[in-house]
Image (cartoon, rainbow over all chains, first blue to last red; front, side, top):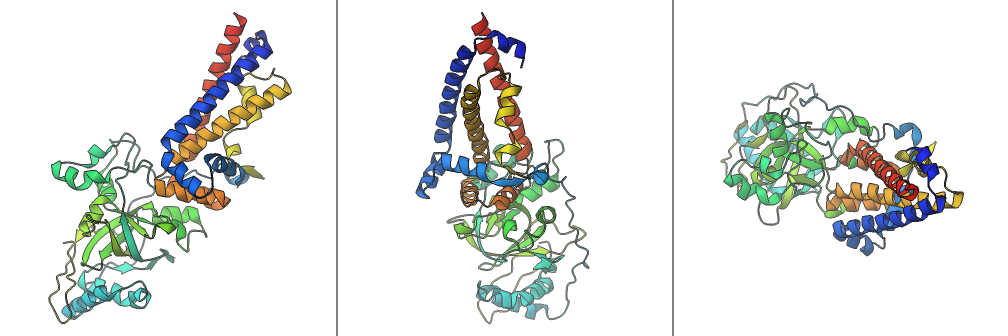
Length: 322
Length: 111
């Protein structure tokens, strides 16, 4: 702005008018905030805080300047294929029926308390019955939890200009997945791509079958969050509903939910439907395991169900990529 | 050296100079700088909150109120990976808006 012009003005006049206009602007900004964030401000008040408290407290947060430049800058998106290098899944040809019954029994009786003692059996049985190698830990990295409540998430913006209509291809999609809506903000990894033209069917599948996990609570997160951010991005997982045996392969597409929600995972609208959790309270207990798929051969989406049968029943359906 | 969160995006004194308000008296500068600072802080916070789901808004607020600096930056980095550049753009746009406002006042005063 030109100082020459500024010098021509009477300083008191400039100051008075500018001050008045800024006061008007300030009130207008406050009014917009109150209107737009009514629910959040109400929640803040219930916690004993105001919007101004939050604004001022944010200003008190210290940031190390040497990191400042790179504080929020994200590394370039990484390749979608997993970087694990373990051997491909091996399907056992023997004792499959027995394994299937065990798996059925295991799922039926699994609880948060007994999960850790049964996890090795679970992983072994899944590989034998489903033919997919899963793991609780890959590259020394694990989730904070593998068994717990999953809640319904919304669709995510996949590229700039994306909207809900782009996610829904027909009337059936509108009926089933339209009511879920689209999240107002981007997922933890931002857009999948920067334009509609560069949007691929693979990306479409990833948004369709994504989970939100509490990456920020992973025991590895604090050690190197930049590395963890990349590692978790679109990491392939198996999601199991132990109550009905429904299984899907998905990717980690968002971070959440918050600890106090009582839920530990989130699932995309399509994923919740596949798991039989798309109606009613739209939440339920699920198991999430990493999929060991270094060649990225296992497709996303539903797998054949495991029939969670009453005890003594032997018929179990299983199969790869069903 | 530690900076405050908003210092990453603007410095109120420098901002006044950038928009051509060097010539104001010290106390006038302070008044204008404080108003501009409050408006920009509100705009930045509004921008962040607008981009978060309600659940994430709550999580963000609790982290801020508990002064968990690292957790806040980690949270923003994770939830809003593009937020740094977007806030910078917001600040640049507001500076431009302020410059125009100052220019209009000066031109009207001079005419």
